[in-house]
Image 1: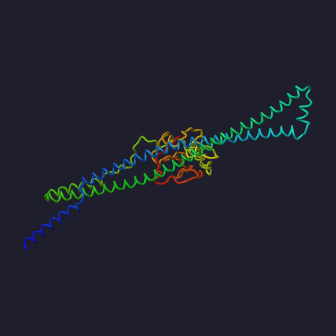
Image 2 (image 1 turned 180 degrees about the vertical axis):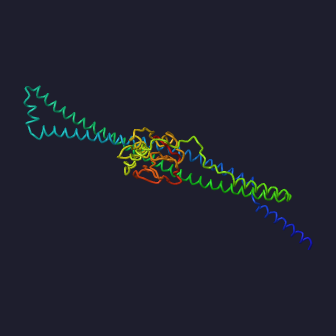
Image 3 (image 1 turned 60 degrees about the vertical axis):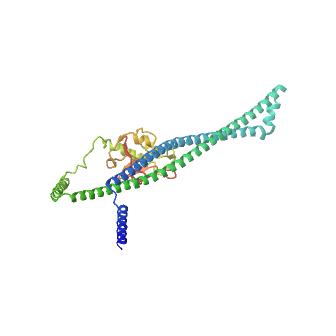
Length: 364
């Protein structure tokens, strides 16, 4: 009976040790190691996002260039078609003059020659004229087909770039969501570390003498009181950033120029009222008041004068997002060319978590 009781006691102690081990709270070091790993993952995600944004910038630049080439090819094709039509109409007129009027044209030219040699020469000239028309038409048709093939090839490349751009945008949105989730995880681990440290401090304090505990409590209360009475300097200026002292009328003129494009369709590489893209709009609005700025959104975001935060933005400033730019019009509103399939419009300055504001730039 004693042996059975002894075995039961050993089994109970063993179970207690297992349960205690299984449910032991993680230490501060364990949590810090877990946080370091989560932070490394967060850094990796942010690096991936930076790489994706750089790729999007490069693709955007290529799409702008490709769009300009398509616009030029379309213009060349229209010109080639017009030349072909003009040549065809001229040839028809000559045919009508030589054949539909009977012998009074073609036959009279041939048979009224002074000699057989002159007659053969006249007939040869008529044949030469026909040969010229035929070759000219063939040349115009070949040119038109070459330009049409070039346009089709450019449009195919543009579609491929658009597909890649959309994939990158989806990747960017996915990474942005993952980064936000990872930030939440890191913040949660920070809270756990803080809580674990607090409990460890409480356990250590409990082992000290009452006198030591009272002294520590007094110090903590004094520190807390000092923190409460500490002046708040969070509103002080960091300095060094451009807040804005330009001529506000110039900024308003930029806004007025941007408004004239409202309703114009979005076209990659476009810079006119027939079609325009986001950086083309900001460039055109500035050009209207005599200000020259870079063509591509990434260069616009890296140039000009830095404005210290959206709260200091003025009408006429450029609001910069990842791969996108807009003209600020005040009251947290912008005018921008959104994306393909949409028209230039007025919208809120806030465009969602996947399109955070990265900079505010001023060129006036």
